[in-house]
Image 1 (cartoon, rainbow, N blue to C red):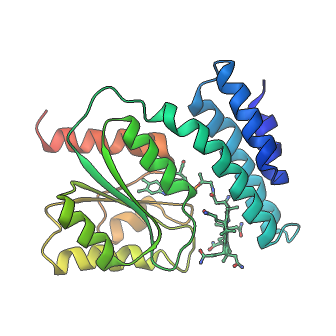
Image 2 (image 1 turned 135 degrees about the horizontal axis):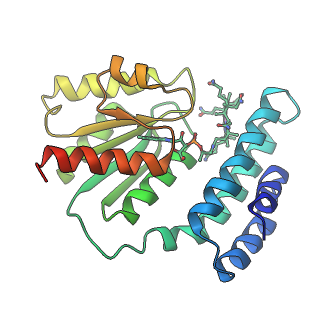
Amino acid sequence: MDPKEVSAFIIEGDNQGAEEWTKKALEDGMDPVTIINDGLIPGMDVVGEKFQTREFFMPEMLVAARAMKASMALVKPLLTESQSSSNLTAVCGTVQGDLHDIGVNLVGMMLEGAGFEVIHLGPDVTPDRFLEVVEENEAQVLCLSALLTTTIKNMKATIDKAVELEMRDQVKIYVGGAPVTDEFAAEIGADGYSADAGSAVKMIRDQLSSAAGI
Ligand code: B12
């Protein structure tokens, strides 16, 4: 089986096709990360390009997202089958005003796979809500996602709020999503940026273990 086949189901917005293909690929022993990186994400990239060139509109993006979620639901249990628990908690969500949550769900799923306890807050989360949940759960990690150039400012608003509440030293804050860059992350005072979920997990683990002196 070729992961490009599931990209086609995503582009067509065929959630049943995506689900059946994923089931079969997993039964055949395909690595879940290969399904995500070589099938689902490239499919979504094409959907984004078609939206930009006005070949696709909102309904097509929505059905593509639904197809991607159908596949991810099958992949998730395999990614999160972690043996080891790290006793670390991460709060993950998309900033206020932004409804894109597929990427941050992936980051959260991969962190669960790495042994983190993850609290998924979903999309459209206010700075106050993020910090309330961090405080309540004594989380060491906060992952902020944004996909819109108009909402990345709410990452800065969340970090500024953490400073205002004198919580900045208690929690590492990471940012990601298509419009985010390393420079932007440094400018707003984040602890790190990463372009994809796999390298995000590596960055977060490396930084936490060096902070703990391990
Ligand atoms: C699906 C989709 C939607 C769906 C979202 C469904 C959902 N539940 O998520 C719907 C239909 C709702 C939607 C709506 C809109 N969308 Co839209 N959408 C997309 C699309 C096609 C795919 C996004 C996606 O899921 N990608 C797959 C995931 C896996 O990738 P990802 O999110 O980038 O995440 C990865 C990394 O970035 C990183 N990462 C993500 N978060 C984090 C966090 C941390 C801490 C770290 C370290 C890493 C990290 O790891 C992830 C995994 O590797 C993109 C195009 C694209 N290629 O990005 C447009 C896109 C983001 N949308 C766009 C637009 C314009 C909109 C709308 C404004 C359209 C409209 N006219 O209403 C609305 C906005 C609604 C709102 N208020 O948010 C534009 C944004 C343009 C811009 N520069 O601002 C894009 C780029 C399309 C385009 N090419 O024009 N959209």
